[in-house]
Length: 324
Image 1 (tube, rainbow, N blue to C red):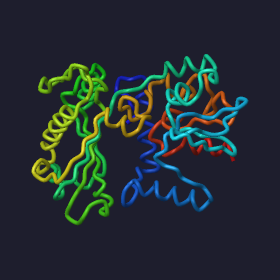
Image 2: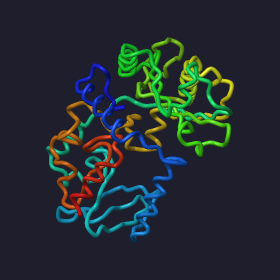
Image 3: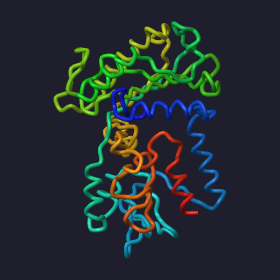
Image 4: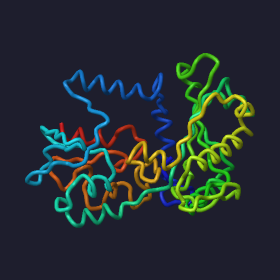
């Protein structure tokens, strides 16, 4: 869950960091669904005089005399900033799309163009008519687990995905929210969400030799569903009643994820490779410092920035501390 493989530089360190974090703080799950945390923030913002504006495509950061003074929307609306602008976007979006070319120093522009994205990700959401029957009954009480053939299998799947192949035996991250939050499903029902982090952004072949790759390498609905069928069949070896008790399912390919969120370039769930050259002081760019940008009053946060993805909004927290 760091976008790294067992043989990648720094992966052993990140494994310890993740283990330490889970041991010290646990792995919180929002009761009733993750959208409730968004609703909670919405309430806090509005109670403190703030306004939320959704479904609004920002096309430009308005800069005057070297300072960010607002943003422009696709519909022509301009929104002024009292103190500054904070962007939760990728370096690609910020420095190549939202800012004019003459506003970005050459060194920063070059760094942004060199910013790298990692492997793709695939999500599969499943609603079951009954509780899953795991081959090991204790697994039904576990909120999150990884189904794989061991370290060698993980390495093999990563290598296949990075070479553009649909993995023969991808690691299946299985999350069972109902195991710890029964409110997530009606009585007697169950939900699973599966995450496949060893997925190619572009498909040039199938490591198992079953699925014919598209000529242009792009994900299609047909390939997405074929691969989903295979993953479910593989998981059915461990959840013996899975295939016969699916009420509904929804799969999202790397291409689908990018359509849902432009920060997930190529379906990369981390908004940028987490290799050592894009971590710590090098994240997001070696030519910028922390969450500041070359533009006064413009701050850069999100998974593309330090300390990286999956850390509960820490980049925004760090930026807020510096601004208060």
